[in-house]
Length: 382
Figure: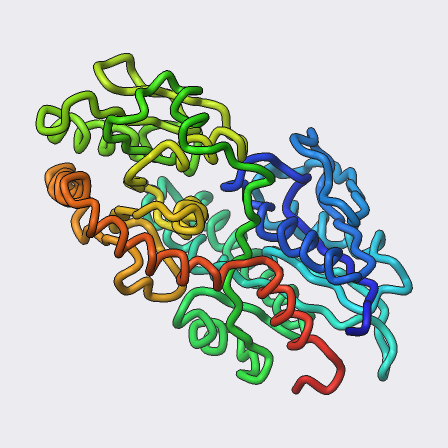
């Protein structure tokens, strides 16, 4: 295996939160470093919540804020990050793609290969967001037109600069080809890497930490964000409330968000790997009831730990999990409660789901994703 010099452009500093936007980039950086590559991670400066992974170099970049949340801010960071990329770099990876060009000097066969991870089409996301806002006058319409033009121009610049575009949402390449005329040969499918827990307690220790008896049914719900409402904490609580009377002593552990004090509910608000690991390991069933649509790394972490997962309709997984996950098509607490009661009452069904789930979760291993990305960005890879 030939080692390379790799610079990863991440959305933020290393974080203990597995749901952090920058988590996939850092997971990939750690896996590339473990392969023997020289890896530096360039990211917007911010409070470091976790030390950088072993073998990686942390490169924070200060970027003045002019218009918070605007596309131009992402483009300013891209330009600043490009100036911090090492001149000896063989490969530069942006995750997510973001806005604007890095502006790296490349000519002929010199200069690094650029790969970018497209998690969504930003222009489509902008259009969805604007469609929910009322436009009050001519000035507002003009501002919206200017903002949309900037989003399109800066997204196009980022996409067209990349030699390879990695995606994990089916249908996304077609959207980008239609909007930006990106050649099909640049696209490669790649699952989002999900870093394993640094360490996980035993089932007994996890339950003891929550003061839960060893012989009672336990459900864990994982909050993708700190705010309970978009995280779907109320849905999980209502589903648990409906089945609790049938399972004496049952507990619900809410990890990563607050929850009201009520019988059988334990809240662990810290958003770090240790908290999520304890909740998952303590559980018999992991219930994901988020309102925010998107990929849920908690599903992968739970499956990797051998726990069965119930997922609501807003949990998006890039590859059909088949029998690995119990999917509930409606965002209804009654539907979630029905699936929850069935699995709590049937240990054999839980074991079957868990067995299929561990095989499914293996595809999200950062080492496997790093191998695929490295192979796809080698000279002559097509």
